[in-house]
Length: 306
Image 1 (tube, rainbow, N blue to C red):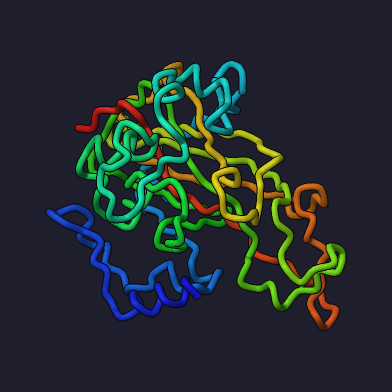
Image 2: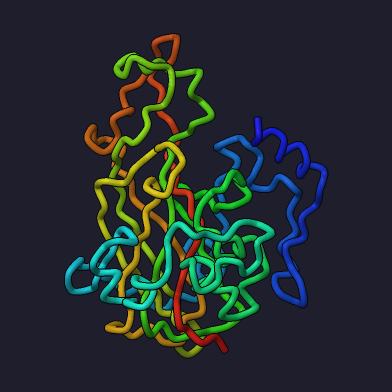
């Protein structure tokens, strides 16, 4: 009901997601990527300069790295000891739960991780554009639904920033996973004895984070991949259903970073990773639910953007 009220209030609006010369081409209707229709809410925008299918890609070459949990200090939760290794001050002094609420401004500054480390505090250029919701410090839903997140399928998105920076510390991303929860009334969930989508099931994804570093008249794409086989999916709303993922970057040459993309692989044939793959609709026909990652916040702490 709350979702419907929010949609009703915002649908008549036209959201011009730009200001002061930043992202002037980004003009969307009020319900863009927030329609409540799961299939229509995917954000799949790629800047043509890093889109290999555009015919205008300026990627000169690609370097691929498989992240190692121990060597690269990969963390998959805020309490992960590896996070303490990459940011001991945040681990000790900032709370994962003290999150930014709309209207609260900097109330949680220096107490909450999101408000303190958000990229819009580092540089004003991250305050504008559709993707600014990834840089505003709000790490969780807080009943804002589609207006708080960027929903992606495997193809992901790729963006070029207004400025460039050197990633000298670490990268982090807060997200959660979800099957198409809008279809729950159309599917027979008899194996679970309920008509609701199972809560807290585990799925597996291979997350891919690519950075685009300026080199001469083009970009070097540097892709970092990591397999996770225990992502909580369709869990009840609380901090434990989110995945706080990241890795240290200072051991790699990530200078002159001008853009980023996020994609993932999802093994739809693996019953252990996709326990709902054999579900049938009420007519007995195979029914496969869409699967998405819902991104809430992205961090590149201590980076100076010029």
